[in-house]
Image (tube, rainbow, N blue to C red; front, side, top):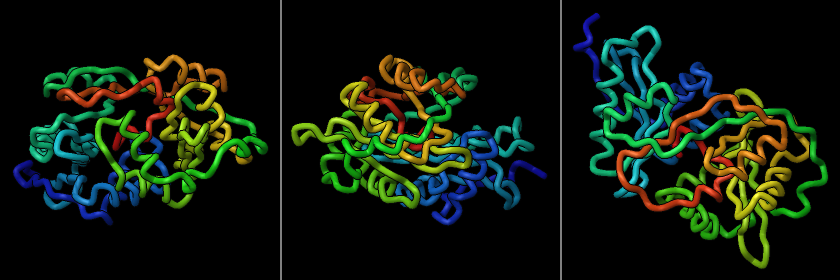
Amino acid sequence: MKDGSFRVRIMPPEEVTLAVDWAAAEGWNPGLADASCFAAAAPDGFLLGELAGAPAAILSVVNYDERFSFLGFYIVRPDLRGRGLGLRIWQAGMTRAGSRAIGLDGVVAQQDNYRKSGFVFAYNNIRYGGWVAPLPKTMANTVSLTEVPFDLITRDDTTVFPATRPKFLCTWIAAPGHVGRALIRDKRLVAWGVIRPCRTGRKIGPLIADDRDAAETVFAALVGPEGGQVFLDVPQPNAAAVALATAHEFAPVFETARMYSGPIRSVSLQRIFGVTTFELG
């Protein structure tokens, strides 16, 4: 089979399930509703590389606005690795992003390759996981995230993400199985988060808070009476977020390198107690 038959095309929304399945095979433990959320938020953001008509490589490049894009799902089918197909779909992704600054959460082992493409290391994100006992009385101090005016959520999200992403947030909050809780103090949104079912256990993301106490309150409300196995992706520079994870006896599962290809709008890492998703930022 000649690699000259390799071509890259946009995946229609109904094919994004393939990307999520490949991510699951890599051990990334995606959420059960991730495919529909990602497809709705970025219907033209997923690229599929085909070799002789068969899926060979995947890459997502979500252009959030005119200045910022996020790259994820950089996967080549295992039996086709080492043939340069990853580079070819990568180049197509760079073309799609254009002049935008690009963010990614890449496996640490690939940092040098990303640097060669102009990406600069910002910090590590660490996935923590563990088991939490049911917390049946912990939702009283919080409200459902759906009760919070959506413009408050989107405005707060801009303090922790380099672009405005209302379409994605709306889909993420309302997805089947996703549960969101928020903490309001003096009519201010001081903490909020979402928990979702995954292939294994549940994952909290995002978890945004002004301080650790507020983060703990929403964390407990999200875990709720179900308890069980929970994962939380934490920016390593946020010592309070790391302390929250370790206080619950969570252990590191793996880590990623957050890297950027250009300057981004300033964000508050100290408010990020849980990253929304490594794939879309």
